[in-house]
Image (cartoon, rainbow, N blue to C red; front, side):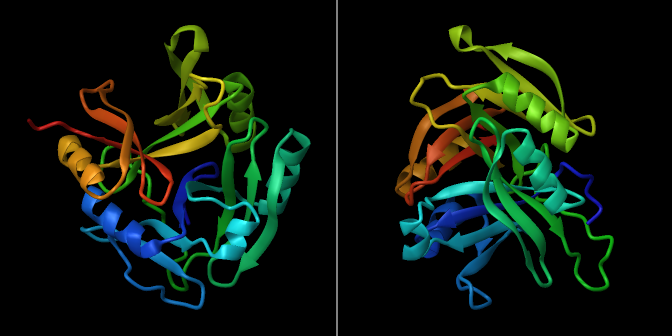
Length: 264
């Protein structure tokens, strides 16, 4: 894929109930998640209404849950060399959760936790045959049904910022005061605003990535969250540019974000 190293190239929802996740996100976002897995592994593509995939849903089986896996969204970062990237990250304080492995026809990948605990996949994708120049479009700054914002809540935003700058070519320009907790630090990649690193607003707040999905109408999305058995934990609040964002919890227990306009 032609995405520069350090790009978000895939997003994955780990869910113990993919059918329930399909019902929820299809209604909230407008996706059409595959109703059944296509292979032996219970993995379903998240299909956008106007074409293309927004990511995938992996079923959390009892064995995975017994080993500590929990419902959550995960992002994949493109790297040129997974093994070298993992070693460099480890030397810099990262924890290797899943060492590098390869999936034929998909690519090589690994899972790490950054030095402050934020979990991400590293991936060197294998482009489809005949599509060597294929590019991932799962992230977009302004399109609905895409991930539009990547936000890390960190116990040490300065440490996390330096880690991602050093290993993935990100930059950090601009910030927003968050009171005594510290500053909300804006992140860029290739000159494009891709997200931010937030301080923990409460000591018990988990260190985690939250991915904000674009929706057509934030109020309609809120209604669908409530009707579908989810919870709005924060928001909707207006963000720079005039749109509104929120953080929610889906019925299976995964944290997610939404961002979009208000039409009322």
